[in-house]
Length: 254
View 1: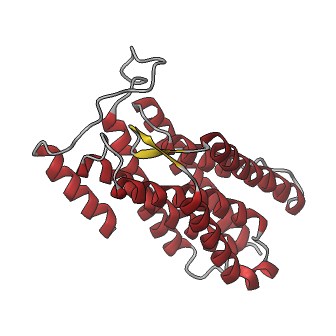
View 2: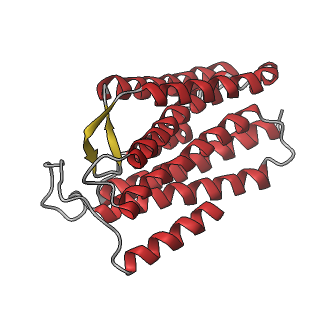
């Protein structure tokens, strides 16, 4: 809540006083003639605050509904939410005018963002694959492994310092490999959830909540227009609520 309010106040003051800087280029060329699909920097900035609001409301919901529930999934989901908080590092680009030339601040902000975007998919994967009660004894070491791997990968992943993306970070080098890794991890998380549902329930139930949460996260991290902003926001909030409600019901009857 402190991060959400603090970032909102600082950003609002700079925005209304005209101190917010914007890049002068637009790499997106498709569907730029429609207001909901064209590049809008306001949509990018709003998506960051949507992430912060999402983390706050989800943690509040989990604190109320899972206070007395010994759920291993909640631990890794909290790690996922913690990782999302680092999306706020993108606000440094409009606040400090880091668009035109790559600076040490821009590089550090980008590596913090990469740490977030490596940690979050892995946390979702562990939410499903290490959800059993027997796996609870490995929680601490798994968190250390996830954090260490994410920090190491973000530190050594090369950056294309010649190009700053309008979404608010320096373009990663080997971006294709990075995207393949992210999508594979998220895909494995989804498949693992389907297998888990098929094994634990007498009647197969498609994990709509989990897939919507993944889809919403993927869309919001790449948001550059109002259509993506609206779609991603609806998916991540509805998906998370559905997933947590189902998880709470599962522990309530076990």
